[in-house]
Length: 316
Image 1 (tube, helix red, strand yellow):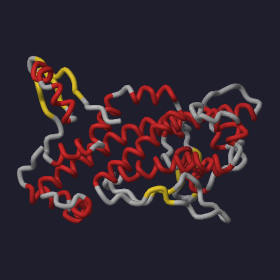
Image 2 (cartoon, one colour; image 1 turned 90 degrees about the vertical axis):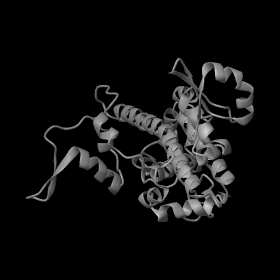
Image 3 (cartoon, one colour; image 1 turned 90 degrees about the horizontal axis):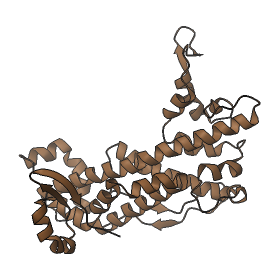
Image 4 (cartoon, helix red, strand yellow; image 1 turned 180 degrees about the vertical axis):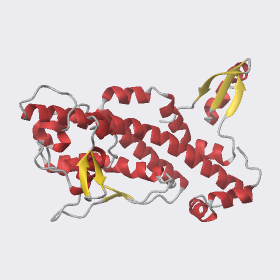
């Protein structure tokens, strides 16, 4: 993990990019900064895995419910996947995203024409970006009060009366957008630990008060870890709303354990020291288990030179 030429490594990463690391992680030397950079990459990958699971479930939940809604409002044979997006008044930007999948631009006539081989509805929705889905809540002709309980079956409120209230729809929208922001930050290779103000989960509409700041921008490594844990908590809660089963699967996965290890002072320190994990034989692991519990060290365990598993300390 230790680079052969630390000066060249900093140049390759970009000294300007690493300047924000120097500001937050004061006192870290060049090798420690590189370790923190690797820590950020590992955190980003782990968080992105959770977000990807959530995004797929969200997309499929919206698609299934809106497909059924179209079926119920059109006297046609039942089809669990259909082109509901062609029958509602999407925003201009959203409609353009759909058209880019179902049509091609004819250069001579400068018009959009339907593709000869139309993609299936499943193919079309699978190509929509994350940001397409929250914007659907702005389509007023859709009875969201009736449909949202089906989209978020794991939410504590399950009645249409609750979801018919705009502020409750707005809170759901804000949660979707929170996850979208962190997704975009990771996708653009921006430091995942670098966060601004976190506002209350509400949409600012004309005539409403300004959004209240829940948390100000992190100013210490401890603050950044707390913020990332909060984002992780809210993302897993969103996943639970969308699918309690997939959320349960996630909490039983190594990804969740790995995130908890990474998003800790112990995990950060290990990466700063460029020793993110220790390698031990099974016999060594058994002998030192009590010490490992106290030090909260991540350990890769092997038997006869073959890996048998990874021990993650619990952070709750």
